[in-house]
Length: 237
Image (cartoon, rainbow, N blue to C red; front, side):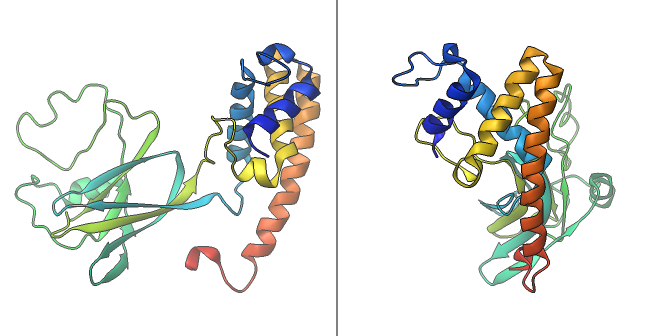
């Protein structure tokens, strides 16, 4: 099902026809918010076969950080160059700061060996580089982004490959679909109805929908566990 079909089912089950502009076209007038919040709820509650995703970004020599959106957790990082691919070791950000404490200009470039998820948020970074530039990356608008620092800085162009658990693609256009809407459309509708009941502050109604949602997620968990216990593990592919 696509977003339009999910929205129509949500409206019919909730009776909230005021959340669309017209019951003939089912144009959104607030329903999408509950559907999107329901999707986020499902993403947070359970990992699925499609939670794991890969992000690739080519960086030039000397570039030692990247950012990407909608990543819930980082699992592994590889550095790909023209001759091969190497997984690099995860370290704490404080370890990297201590190990690479010299200025950027005074640090030799090479093949990156380590990475760390970085803390992007800075309350005030106006003086960050006032004396010298160090390996410390921040963003003014970081609310939707995750970042990693990888060191030493590469001495050639490389492709950084990040494996992690990513949020499901948001449904925003009527024709959009995603993992939940295709594989578990009624579960997505139920999650949206849960968000609606929470907005009413209806504890009993919310608990009923939460129970239905969690029962369905338990069944999905069993499928994921069965696949992970097979001989070939997807993350090693």
